[in-house]
Image 1: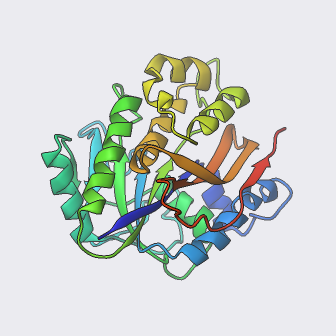
Image 2: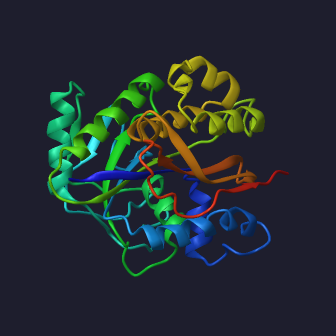
Length: 297
């Protein structure tokens, strides 16, 4: 059967896509940011995932005020890079896995999650930037991707508890798929940032790192953080971190951290990145040593 072997969390700052596309990823400003992903790039080459369930939010590229799905799953065969106002990113098309995606859609809907099924859409930096951070600039992405979009742009977004529960349902769906597939779940977005108003530029390093701490081990307290705490402590865009909880919920009751990276500044945000393993007590191979990279202003 298919199995979820790892979870990856990462910010999806659009400026990082620009840095990658224009070969600026090793300059004085971007170098420390991208260096925190070097471990993961080598690890992914060894892991060779077949499919990534990539949890992200659309930034008015595929969805707008005409339609705002709380949860949407891409069941198409291929997704092009969206034009976000300055032309599509020069990255490969994203190849989907329709068979697994439709299986997941059926399982999730029967588990009472009202998924919106999307067969045609372009994907923006929310999805393509994490792929660039983890895989660099390949001629083709090395694995298939199932986009799972979450509304964190327009009120009301789903609660952290609902996102965690969705992750649990994703795990059930994947593990009931009969083909032998190595599946990873990625949660993207965040960390603390606010893009407008008198608190524009807000970064809360202490809160961010407590959140990263909470992704490891057997505690599920992160699922109970209310919306108002995200808004107060992490800015208006910090709510994106509920998407990391879909990833965390999909990994089961207990996790172990393989790699962690946190850096300030990245544009006007903090950037966070973590690689997790499910820890089921059955001797699952923990390839690679724990690495912690913490950088600040």
